[in-house]
Figure 1 (cartoon, helix red, strand yellow):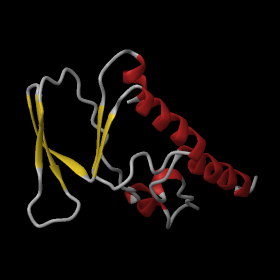
Figure 2 (spheres, one colour):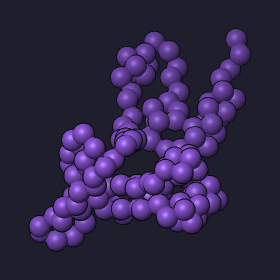
Figure 3 (cartoon, helix red, strand yellow):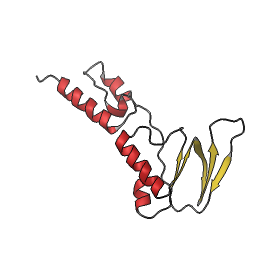
Figure 4 (cartoon, helix red, strand yellow):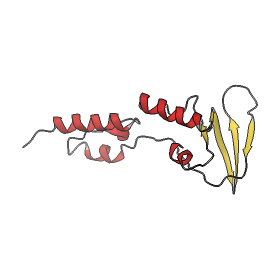
Length: 130
């Protein structure tokens, strides 16, 4: 969103959670959200995309109420989709009986880059030289 808005695009961020960029480092998040607000980005939290049809996006609010509110964004030129992540431990599970396995980063638990770098460092420091 920040890169798009810097290139003179009108930006709408649609986030299903109650807060946007909750997993970003605090200073980076603050600066990014300030920049988006200063350049009039529209941020919709508690909202999900239910359909994309050409240049039209159908949204639905998910917070509160029994009847969801719907909204249509029309005349869309670009859509950037960032979907949630899930850890995938299948490879580690298949190797753990034969080798020491250290799950780090999103393989261990979905997190951020700083956490993954730290976990990688700690795992590397814990590996014994033979």
